Amino acid sequence: MVFLFSDLNDCNISSNIVSGNLQGIYLSNSSRNTIFNNNASDNQNYNGILLRTSNKNSNNNEMYLNKFRNNANNAYSTEYTNVWNSTYEITYTYNGNTYTNYTGTDGNGEGLDDSPYRIDSDKDEHPLMVPRENYLTALFRT
Image (cartoon, rainbow, N blue to C red; front, side, top):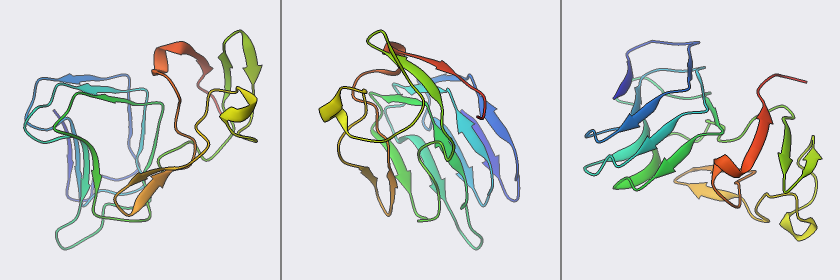
């Protein structure tokens, strides 16, 4: 389990495999963190990722290019100021074509869903159509 608790802020959490736990990635009262390129799967009792608050906030976190699969609940957030997609353009290759922005919908075949994916009061503006492994990405800001 990856657990950030009580004012652990401004952290980067990346390239972890979190599998077979009670919780996958758990943030409590932690803000302004970047969580990307993680795999949270088979956390059967609770969540792949949980962002919650007790007396403070777990907000202004940015999550993208994560894989949540076969968890009791893949993603849960009690906040509404978290971002579930990159806030900057990521260059990626899908089906042999390279894209650098999020214009259009999958109607044009760029590999992104037409509609945002709701996560409680948050949403992922650019959900992937197929598993992350089908995309080649350059993880740097442009």
